[in-house]
Image (tube, rainbow, N blue to C red; front, side, top):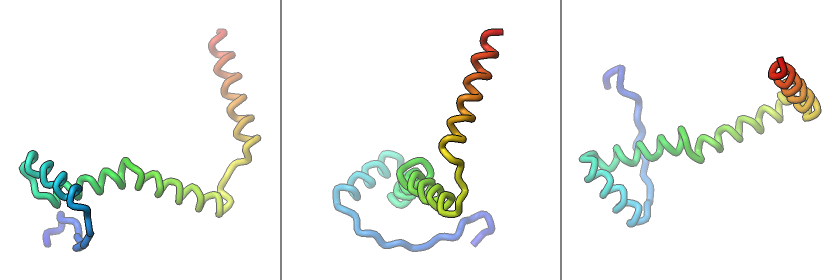
Length: 92
């Protein structure tokens, strides 16, 4: 395999017929293989969709478990200071 090609794995997945038909229609319209369309859908899910949100939430919970947090009152105080500075700057 050339160095610029990512490693791949074979995945078997049971998918309802209507979903396969939809992928086939899209693939035909784009003149691309069904697997190409499915890969794009999976990447979008992981990069921009629910999959990314789940990863972010999981990391956030891990950070909290490690004690990597800021007390709520400290956050409020920082926000109040920013608002006060912005208001003071706008009055100049």
